[in-house]
Image (cartoon, rainbow, N blue to C red; front, side, top):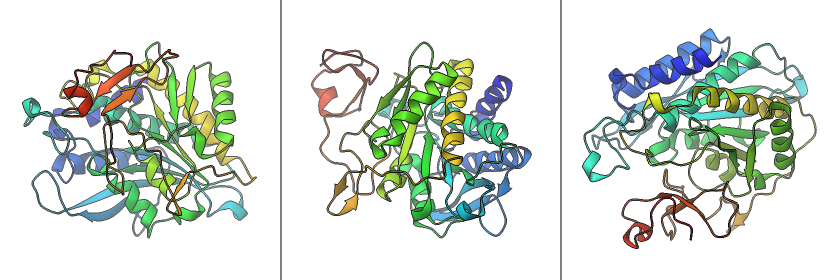
Length: 350
């Protein structure tokens, strides 16, 4: 419901959580909140030793020290025994920048970055999607995976894919990533990564038709979020995304700016996509570009987490994929990038 979606965003952006920085008490509290909500939604624990948490260690946090952190994993078992180890994964990252690490403008260092859109919005949709799908009895298992460490380089999703996890990554049917989905407004819901399997474009069109929510399919995966960890492992994956804005990675990304009715629309599209995937028996195609013999993501990257292979050359802009042209409309500029130094600003058409 819209009320619960708004309540999740409010809880995850509460002042006491201080921006959910990696390895902080606020991030731990966020993980505990998500675990409690997964249990309340009727999910089974799929983390370590019969618990919701999948624990792992990161080598560096804002304090410059290692820390023990956790993903949160809930499961809806499938009804088809032949597909019991071939799940659909729904992923959203629960961490943000805390007081400004690792990506922050100097003038905002020390200020709380509550991360309402990035990505309390995605976690809220994940939790309500789990609640909505509880009684569907889908053929495939559906894993609801709230990861941490996305802002520091997709650490949590890489941990899940690398294993050991409740499901072997190579057998994952597909993944749907919910990241930055709280500013839909009158815009189109962008679906990034539809080029990773031939079926995505048809599934997206179908979800759009059923829900009445306008969508924009973008073939490129980009290197911005946790779906890329699945793509790098050869798994078709997409990201739902409502677009970049001037509050990205700033203290001004706050809860009152979230479009809660828009979140409900995103949840409706996500439910159609995930339900379709979870009910599908046939094998899916894989159309993932390869680099040096390994699955690889697109070389085009918006600001955000780094890929496992590191940054490549970038001008430092993120395009508006809903803009029909001519030219390319810029919606975000990376601080300190060649684009910023050249005077490119959000709203410019190149």
